[in-house]
Length: 284
Image: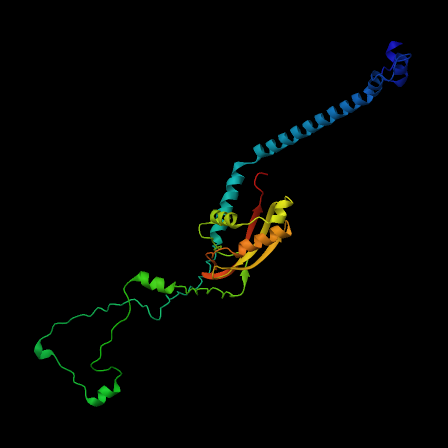
């Protein structure tokens, strides 16, 4: 009776888990075990079938290779050799290559040496050929002139002349005398540098009385033009603090001594210069 019981059937699994917690996980694993077993058996059978087919193919190929006679291979080699001898490859047509003549330079030409053979003869056998005036007129050779070769024997000179490249120098653009530059090649310089400039401003500044009474202090930024002669030109306030402080900063800047002017392309030009002027009360 026990042999007829299918342990993988759903009825048997329900009977085993009757009254037990089926959400625990063992019930789901037991119920899906039949599918897993069937799938595993199918995979094993497919693998065994593939191995058997590969083994059969390998044996068939080896047997055919052993049964092939060696004389057939040799005969095939002989036939191939005979066919190769009969079919001679056609020689490719030789392409005509034109030799490129070296380029002769119009002025720099190498000197050439012409070898002249000297033949020693007796005085009696020497015949002097004297041409008449009519024959001299018909010839292109000038009498009494010497042709000097103006070439050179240095190969490097010829190559340098051939590879010479003429480079035109770019002339600097003209500078407008009335233009005021913001960025230049050489900035304007105060005699002694920036430290001397700040010290001069500090020594010559006068604190406005109204600003001093109202306890007003701070920084005023002034921008002015250093002309091409080094003198101070236009002055303007670009950052204001107080009208009285602004007026004093402009007055001090206008009283500055001459600068070393800025330069552009080697020429003196007008340049904007920015200077911060600080007002600070003593004891505060």
